[in-house]
Length: 475
Image (cartoon, rainbow, N blue to C red; front, side, top):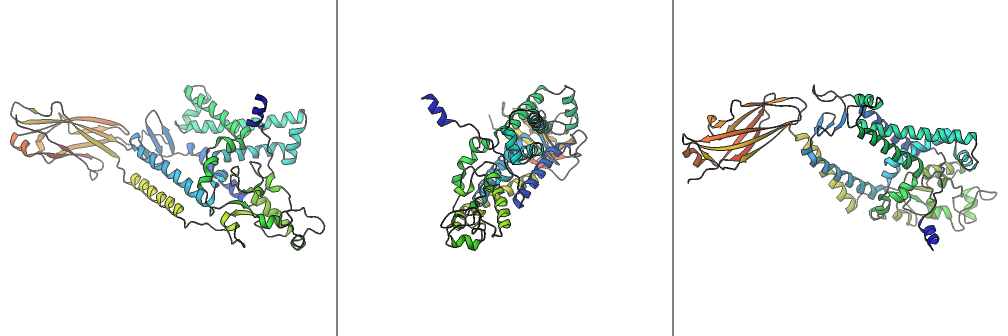
């Protein structure tokens, strides 16, 4: 009984050996991979000059210093609102794109797809095209198989290690960390992270591949709720391909479209190239399937075969279920005039605008004032009433700054900050300043609110006003 249940619950993976194909979708996938790899692997090495104490690295996540350097932008923990906006924008963009063009993200931009494509390219480079790889897989272990398989896995591990090491370089100054890593002087967490990411990349892109898309990725499971009949997806034109008598191989009397239609056969010649190029190994002719990642490679393969047969292209194409169901399908197009698409689009525009506005209007100075309320006020020996305050100043710039603190709404001599009115705050640091405000009883009784003014000396026009209360009551 246990063996029977195991056979139902688990299935041994059948290796998929994809065939190479040329076409506009394959070209777009290569271009996307080249761009993604260029950005990911080169960005830590792109120099970017900031302040004299800031690292000259374009993108750096300084966790110990609690600062994220993004080119000229420095992000602090108090800017967590931006992360919330980014997550919302990413989610909305995914739903927006899926409603329009299905799983295009999976087919072109997903990390699993990008790294699997690179691993497959390495496999093809070492072991040859699909028939050669199939033959090598089935043949007994000998010198040729050991050499080619070992070299393939060695290059996979090298790319996995390079991927993991690059990820770590985003969290410290890259040239310095690389030297420390090679010489064995890097923090232990760096080696641990590289080990984990190397292993996971090697397994996911080298061994699991389509298994990640089929069984591990949650997006594949809930994508159906985001599809509409108007959603563009990779589709097989069943009526054109099957005809009345079904598909048939091109033999004598069934080579031209006229001959095939006269005998009731469709344009599909059952070459199975669409299956051979599919990275998940599905047959798109069976209809929409959750395993399809919408990469478009089957479209390229089918179009190439249609060209060789002198048949019109588009037997497999991006199209919607609604259009395919028409008696005479029209030319495929994006159906964006839908309430759901317009709603997600509006949300994207609003939230993206909010993020850009928030980033653009953020000052390099952040300050807050808190009244010391124990005691609420004190009466001095000269009869004046004193309130005490704590002024917190955060310098969000990459340069040290000197700030002038004054009070508005009370006499100039009412502010007491000890022996200084100016404070120096280092780049990315905060400082708390103690201040006291003393007023004569008559003025104290009529004063309810006033403001602290914090002014950067290098930017006197950027004054930050902090409104607060002055408390006093008669005994």
